[in-house]
Image 1 (cartoon, rainbow, N blue to C red):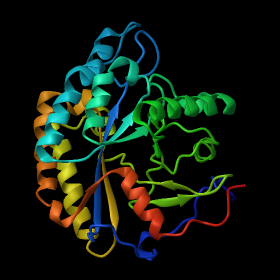
Image 2 (cartoon, helix red, strand yellow; image 1 turned 135 degrees about the horizontal axis):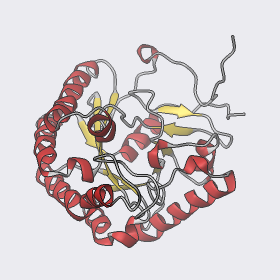
Image 3 (cartoon, rainbow, N blue to C red; image 1 turned 90 degrees about the horizontal axis):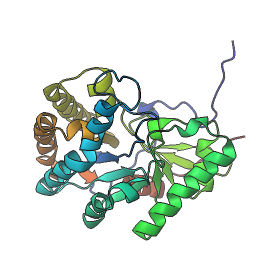
Image 4 (cartoon, rainbow, N blue to C red; image 1 turned 90 degrees about the vertical axis):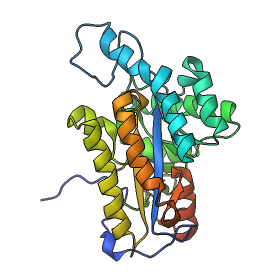
Length: 298
């Protein structure tokens, strides 16, 4: 029986990989991903705190908006206090909604990565020409505001068309966060050459953990700590990546923020034994050490 294949990468057991090292000489690279997202009012997609009624769904819209007005700022205070860098996954609509919030991350020298225009829509539903235009729109907005184009991309809702990796490579992106299949960066094939997939978590991620699995604030913090402690042991013999995916409207709520601070304080206390960095720095380090595949996707 022959199953459909994506042909983006080959199967390779993690126990049978070429060795590489992180710049700090430690086995575990850790990055914090902050999703800054803007949602349309009265239409489109959006995570739900409670089952929404007919549009306009004021309850869930206002809950998500809390993240940009309050939660994200409290998270910046926390990151500053712990001296932690971040990769910001940015809906480009945030430049119009909350330019001062993006500027605050710019002032911290956080990495800015592309995350579509808005999380009210999926890019996977677009025709190729429309998706190309969407990626170009986001890239241009970030380039103009930040003075350089973004290196990385996370699709809204991690929704891809069959050509998304090809379009990202052709738009100048060096890595994607869409594929969560590994604990190391993986070279993917595209029709225009290799694109790097940097691990982005779907377990240590507040949307599936808190919204889908109904994890408590304490439970989500414990999940982060347990993942970190286990990966620290695994990374004693092999370089690995741990990402922590966060949304201010979820973990920026006071009770969750308190437990998140506990988890990140635990990680920060071990920073001499890890590489605390950004997704882009991970991509650059890996690409400088591990050669790209020669064959492009058909």
